Amino acid sequence: MEAWIPYVPNWLLIFCRITAFLLAAPVFSTRGVPPQWKIGLAAMITFLTFAAVGLNAPTEMDGMYVVSIVREVVVGLLLGFTAYLFFTAVQIAGSFIDIQMGLGIANVIDPMTGASSPIVGNFKFIVAILLFLSFNGHHYLIDGIMKSYQWMPLSNDLFARIHDGAVHEFLLRSFSGVFSLALQMSAPLVVALFLTDVGLGILSKTAPQFNIFVVGVPIKIIAGFLLLVLILPGFIYLFQDLFGTLFRSMDQLVKLIADKPN
Image 1 (cartoon, one colour):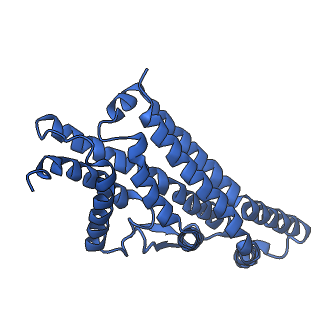
Image 2: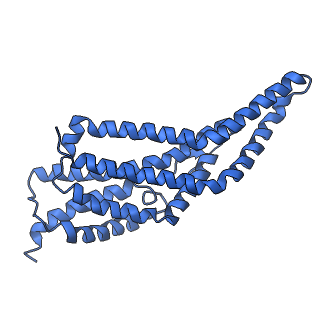
Image 3: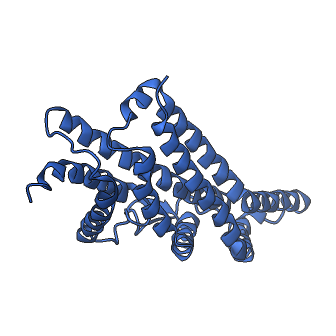
């Protein structure tokens, strides 16, 4: 036991990074996952990771150890937030579609996050979660956080990279990329519903005695749901590209923090 005691601080640092990652990463951070299960999973992954990287060099539990804990928590939150950021593209795309369909006010409570979300966005988010699980994306997330220690050891330069502004620039690029993906995902339905509005406007000018826009709202809702059903089989290819971009962004973040500051 005396030989293991000097490495306990290493185990705690690894536990902090993995716990923070599970609290922010998609699937694992949902409200349906019990907190006890999250802690148990984090402890199990910590033991596996500790056997590979935790025995390299013991960490002194001095005044700088608190800074190391904060650094590991921030690393875990950054990786988890980057992964979750691309799932918000699905909800943003759903909100664009809801506005065009006339369902912008009719929001529902998202059981995954407990927040209010658009109807179509919530539906697409659930489909994205199911496809992510079917693609074993949660396994890749766990594998990614374990392999992050190859690039970002316990003595990484996170604060130096934050001071240089590299992390902020990466997050801004990721957010703009997510917004661009949301526009691309919602474009087919938004354009089709816009053309529906144009057609209703032409009909209202052709026959002004009929109040076309009274029936325009249900027509747009029916047309929106029909188009959604038609493009539903293509979601598998759409989300494959989305998940690929997600893992590439996580890889870029890991390599960004691993680089030495200028």
